[in-house]
Length: 365
Image (cartoon, rainbow, N blue to C red; front, side):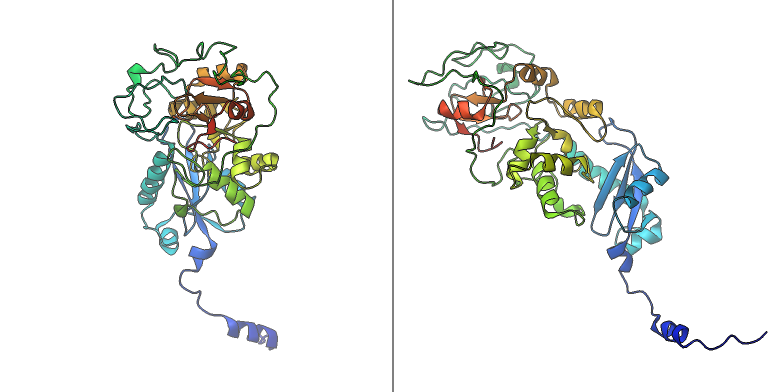
């Protein structure tokens, strides 16, 4: 057999060949692994994990469909979670170890925090101690929720008995009594759902999930493929605690672009890590559940599992109530905030005119 002619280019290219550097796969590849939904609501989950951490999550897809969805979004190779691939990515080579890790962070992201036991809070008149009279509340937390050390049995809750705060006829009434301030307005603004006045200062973390107080440690996730605005939207969304919701307008405002509500919605629709980045806690401005990547039924079930009262939320939506104020603290809140009071408003502007201040925890905008 004749010897093939010498090819200088092939020889030169062969001379450039070298051993792949250690850790190369960690930087360029990902593995995929399946696990059950810890909440028991969604079909089996499948997660892509890079050397940094989880990068992509979907429900109800087999390996082939998940791989296709991954490659439609990412350029990295996607490998099965074999011991060798896991080791190359810097993970424990046991797939069950990775499943346990993912299950832990998912459970943490979806589990409501323990009930608050604060015994002192600031009011316009000064701090209230544990024995001071506290107004009842009608937020959207389920009856077992507590606020400021008040037992759930003594609060009106959303399905249970209890007295109403002074100045209201209860959450079911269409009209509330005037605020009591000389020259003040009625609590429900007769105007339409117009734009709210701004007034929530800053974007620091609040104890109940203000922007920056991420429910999930974002350092364990791989968000490297996101644009700066997408990353800001997802960071803001990650600060919404279980059992609470915020409107898209709030997300856009706290992501630094209050006029980009539609763009914020698009970023959430493309959320690579639903559940870990809880986009199911973002709703339209009217408080209705809205759309969700896994469907509206799954969104409702996830929120109900986080002890959000969906019947009460629907009632407020029907009556176009967007904010609830607490006369004792002088704060106005999103209805799902655990600090929400009983006085109902359709716009933030009306609440501000009545002398209320934006809640430092949920930071309404």
